[in-house]
Image (cartoon, rainbow, N blue to C red; front, side, top):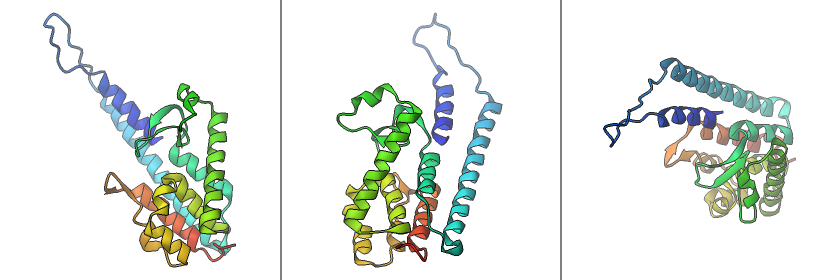
Length: 212
């Protein structure tokens, strides 16, 4: 949703021509509708508040009665965070992506033509299975801990994680709070949404039955 809102705002500004090198050419300067702008900001704030409430609910559910996190809830989190994109776009990490944050790799050029919702779901499940298998093989995790780090890997991939102190601490069975909460920056600046996601993963990871 946030990607859509930002795109909408940029598209409105892109139609504004500030000057013209041809004196005989009319300069079109449409007035930016302040009501539209206010509406977009309001919708963005509403979505952000909903994300906060849903994250808080998931954190509480993870702790209540030593709840076991379901894979459906992990998939739902990815879906609402990434939002469905039918056409390719460049993600914050600079990778050409499509669907629910699927990075288009060599041999997948056909995805550049756009995809359907069914294809997006298929790519999401395939990617999730890949990261789940990787976490199982390399970190030997189970239960909520497996789900927490699978969700983490979906966001960041495995290459950087494997070289990190976080990876070493997981392997050695040490507490990970200090390290996982470092993964919250976008272009060097802390991001509140990423911080909430890391805290939620940490809650899952540390839950009483996280290993089962």
